[in-house]
Image (tube, rainbow, N blue to C red; front, side, top):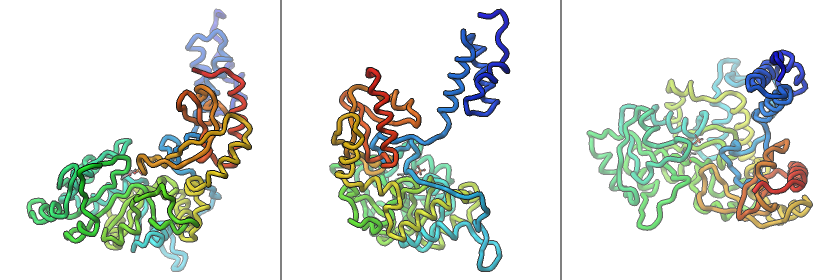
Length: 426
Ligand SMILES: *Cc1c(COP(=O)(O)O)cnc(C)c1O
């Protein structure tokens, strides 16, 4: 150890080749010196490299989880020049327009709704519709649908935050239209709205009964259905071969509205395959009430998201599922994946199973193909640049090619080559 600690400034300047801003280099230098590192420059460089590596960045998703919440759910290309837009400007009249006119209108058209409103995420959509349509009043929910979706979205908690009052009906496993009728008939409960919640990542099986949307809609108050996943149309007209078998009976926006729901809500970045957003679609008067509520101002997305979502809506209206990375990956034929896996020339080609993830379609597997490596290589693959995220099964590391863009195959090959030169981690 030198008698005088090296100067923070000198250490920071000697790692200036690490591509992060100077104040962050100074932090790394200060931390290295404070830690009493024997080689402060090397230690500061390691710290600065780590800061650079942890920045928000592209990763290769080899997990086979198509909507991986930790990896940003649906992948989407977004490029936008630094220009002004007609975000809230009506080009026809030259007067103030509405940011609701673009993506919202197109999404409504794509799912057969009268109108749609875009907010920041699915949770915001539910919160806003409850606040706008039922604050201070009752909202009837089946006891079988008082679920937690993950990441803290709990139906009773969202209800409490909205200022609406939860009116529980039915039982955990069976809820009938008569249960809703009894609640609605009770003036003390003042039921303004019925909320149905898609259980998403949770299943109730066995002695069960659920009231149909049509039967609940016949009870009286408007029915809002939190679909979660954002499947626009069960017929999947954007896919040349129609709905894939793994979609099974996932509820879709168009059919739910046709069955009598007044509103549906869903996320932008689940099965819709778009950016993080939430959508409220359905009856124009109710959608307008949501758009006029003061909370909308706090929950509305900016032009970047609305532009990306508009492109997604246009792709649906063009019936061009191939333009949406989620649908392109989800429907890639096994044969294509096999050819790509063999062409990588690394690891062992294996059959595996992808899942949609993101709380959608629990227990549903999509047959897939990947490459397997002996042992757990996930840490080394993560430290590759760009990081490759893989999973471990039965003592092997699997990289599932369904969630890898073909343009990333070369990255996977070089990452695997690099790690197979080292011994396994465990
Ligand atoms: C995912 C989900 C949500 C939450 O949506 P976010 O976009 O994650 O906020 C709410 N309800 C249901 C039924 C869901 O599946």
